[in-house]
Length: 132
Image 1 (cartoon, rainbow, N blue to C red):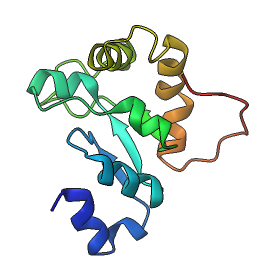
Image 2 (cartoon, rainbow, N blue to C red):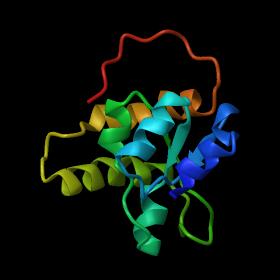
Image 3 (cartoon, one colour):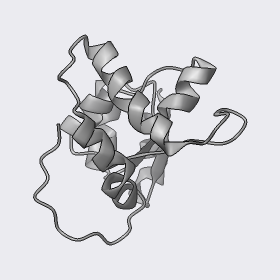
Image 4 (cartoon, rainbow, N blue to C red):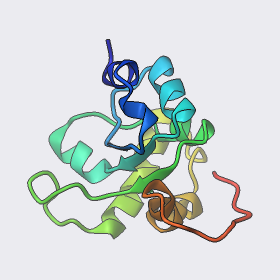
């Protein structure tokens, strides 16, 4: 059983959840996150340094999952520099999709700003933004 499936079975996803990294997700996991309105902290620099995998960022966004960029912690990301994450997020997404147009720089900027607030459940003004 995957971590999201186990958390859902135990009722954990009924609460307010911010999932860190979310790198090893199958189709059912993606659906569970969307169904339970779980937000994701996407930390591509940390994941790249540790070789722990790459989050399916575009699949998360396509399902309407709230995603914000993060740096993780000093043990797994040497500089904690959000601008590096802003650069890496679209690069990783483009590399895994083999499509240079799959995630725009504007969308990455949104994930680093407004997306972080949304993922944390902070009040944000309505937006006319269309992802990707």
